[in-house]
Length: 509
Image 1 (cartoon, rainbow, N blue to C red):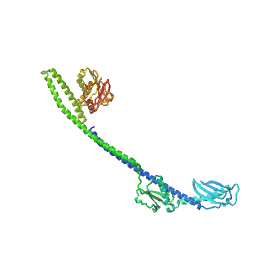
Image 2: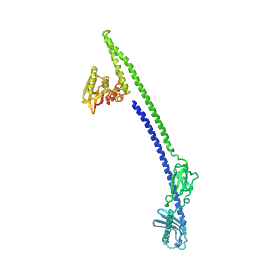
Image 3: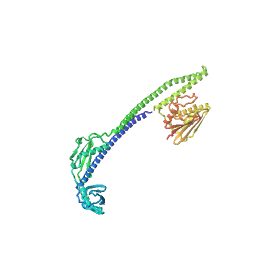
Image 4: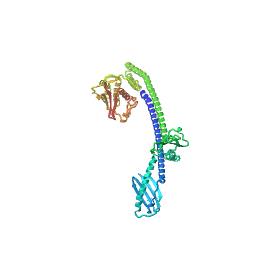
């Protein structure tokens, strides 16, 4: 992981955590405000229900008073009848009348489904009527009750405009009982205080502990809102203790905070681990650098001594010394090659590698590498087929590193052969790229291993063959160099059928 990536993570992660913390805090704030708003709506609803019940109580009381205030009529002239029920309707008003043979009667006046008046009395029945008594009673009753309806309508119209003193219209005990009933039904258990004010602002009644200055939220509603006169009386209510509105969301707040702290802790721990891993990676690269430099000196000495021994082969047992010297030289070159690969990988990992890009003809570079490698292929009894078909082959490359890439792929094709190696090398254009394709007839790579062949130090199992040497750095180096050139590499392989590598490089603009 590069230093730039680590720095980006160290910046973005705290910002993301702070943003998440702000969002969670905002959510909790909104939830509490919503609960307070719901509580206020419930209180207002309860207060409206209480006011509605007060209006109903006043209306019912007025109707029962009308029973005793209506003018009386002598109904004795109707005579003696059997128990009779008479219903009649006029002017959208229904009159229900019932009288029995003892003279007990009941009158109900209903308009639009609402009972306006009830009249109960006793009539002095002095003389009987014939079979048409009910008809006579109904006709006479209609005339009498019509006058009573007009009386009730005038009386109720006056009551709507009448400004009775508020002290005569309320019962504090009744109001308190209605509030308690409404709050209990809606799950509100906090103690409350209330006061009733007249239209002039005078306190008509208040509970003993009512102190409006100590209230946080005061709920005010108009009393008798259906009155037609202009004066307005109102009730004010508050809760002596602040309602515990967050009880049911504490179960969400606590685990949210716990998980937030857990995420923050894990994030900090992750950053620490990343920094520690970065230091270990730096130590590893430094160690590799020191190790390779320490190795290069004795390797150079061995190579030099071997070369001198080979030069003296004509004097002292030429054949024996020459063969041993060639072995030393070969092994020295192999060790040098491995050390160079380690150095190259370490330099790319640390970001210190600097590509020296120049415009080169890829066809020419590939052709030079193939011609150099051709002798080794032929010594193994194989063939190498080269076709440069790319019409536009100019690209920006580091010639040394890119030559090593082609050489590594050809070396792998020779190293992992089954029989006589047959290698096909092609160059061609595809879209705005030049493609270098290297195909062999070797042992192939399984689908599972194809996913990991570019990983550092990974080596594909070669079965019973133990003559294949290496550190597993060749393809890692190839992929790194290709990507540093802005290209990509792909692999297509099947076991026992061979492998094909395609390198895609952007053309020079």
